[in-house]
Length: 435
Image (cartoon, rainbow, N blue to C red; front, side):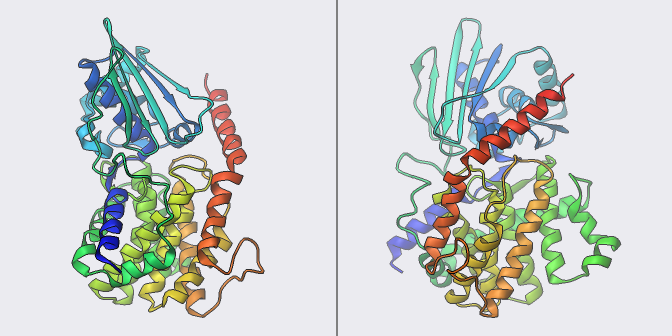
């Protein structure tokens, strides 16, 4: 592979694999509020937030780090009170208990309005308008969780300061025309190790999240249940069960709002966890070398990035389908698989998990990640046995890249009505449960 191609891929991965604290949708909202507040230059007396349906869906039921609370209102309040846009997806890392009390008081006083922005084509859209005294400011994030497309004060545009190191005007996160699964494999398998060793930071951050989860009680505690006598008695103490438990542990902590960064992938912390920890755990127990693990992690993360480019940042398809496909190819590589085996693992994944819905970010996402990584291991084992779902079956094509695009076409286009139905169910349920 030419050096210029390798340089482009490294830049892509560094844009898409970044640290994040908390679920990226409410954190992106907090980031937009923080930027608008900074533009205003004072604490807003009124904050109006308008969101695309997918942002609203993914931000309704998830824990906000270091607050003990869930949902958008506290994220919005803290974005204004103590958020710093320079921190990007770690915008709320300076939050204190006193800030949380102030934020709840700000909410109770009725300063915040949150609504659905209708008639949008863009699924990732956040618009914030803030007012104080006789001044106003406005900020819009669109297309990517940290990409500001508008910032203004009193109607006058302000310079679009590059808040994020992962976004620029020339970067299109939906352009996969220059990538293929084979190019992904070639890069991961042959690039000089010093060019890709940065990916090991994903192991450091995501393992730390799993370790913290063991020290507390987060979410539905699936990870802890699997490590206890009951879980071990049923599931055993195998590579398979350990892969599921370590992935679940990190997701439990993140979805419950643990104040710890994880390494995200394509704007999702859960995708980052799912692309990282199954590969790490398999390598540890299979006694792979450090270099083999580094290459497998790059293969996993880059596969997920490649698939997400044609799927889009947010969709009706659960992100664990994409990320666990990445981990499946990483595990297949660690098993000694060739590119042929990796193709088969991808096809096996698509044949199984296509259609898993995203019904928002929440503690029960851990169950979906567990399903995804379970399938990742099974697909890898099947591939290494030279068994693969064929083009005579369902949506699988002889060509693996066409199979991937069949998956993403269903998730991006065919499931749009599903997305609307899910959101209607979620919002109606929320409204009906209010006193």
